[in-house]
Length: 413
Image 1 (cartoon, rainbow, N blue to C red):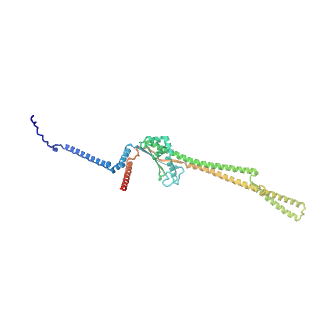
Image 2 (image 1 turned 180 degrees about the vertical axis):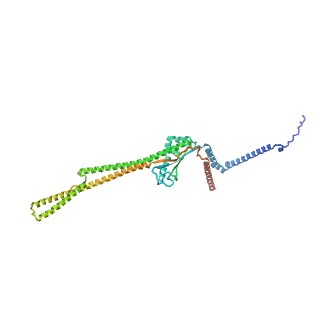
Image 3 (image 1 turned 120 degrees about the horizontal axis):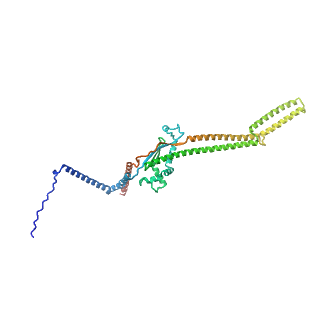
């Protein structure tokens, strides 16, 4: 077969880009496209460098594990998952009805005295107590709200104990005593604005009931004590009165002292009569015979007076029997006991009346200065504040880990 004649190969000419024939618009789009490609390449290079730095280099791996990953997780939680917490606030104080001019300047507007701070602090403790928590749970179902209205991290665990429930409640309520004006500032957090306001309203209602109950209980206890003292004083008065009456009935004398005075008067008269008769007897014997009838009669009269004086004297001071002096001493003792019992009973009655008055004047009441309101915007969580603090803490942990690692390597070498 004849040889096949092959055509010479075509010479390939290089393609020359003729930019002169293209429009300015096409040139502009081409340069923009090239700039975009260049930026993408730079980003890819930057991403490659970051990847090499944070995933390949050991320090970068530590920084990624300790700082970046936890912070990204926290960012996702706070921005996408975390439940909003609404706040209801109230300010109140305990006022006594007898608070007056003893107030410190600046506190007189509210009738607050330094001693009143004890009442506020007692109420602060009660608001955070298990009694208040049980009351709120019975009225509003607070535990169910904490378990169902929040995200899976912020909510109360269904298996939480009573102590965990109390700690969770205390972490969502803040009661602070204000030393400046003597008031209690309360902030209640909840996951629904209307429910949060209901919690605050119920806390104020229960607090007012608690204040009234404590005040009335103290007043009633004081009145009860004073009444018991009055009853005791009255019983003692009756006992001493009965003893004195029994003594008078036994002796047959209304007043031994008066009887003694009467006997003393009789003895004085007898003594005077005796002296007169003795004087007359001496006078008669000076000029009459002793056997005369007049002298004998006068002698008999003198002996009768002496005998009567001795008898009356024995009634007063005879040591062998119960004398009038002993009876007078006993009656004076009984009368003194009766007088003291009467004074004690009178004082007890005055104290009872005074206690009743003071109890009515010193009753306390809860004064709400700033009423709670229903929030429209959530106050918590504060995303920027929380993430900034978390980042700072993570950076501190990373620095601490680097320090520990450097120390270990230094000792190893």
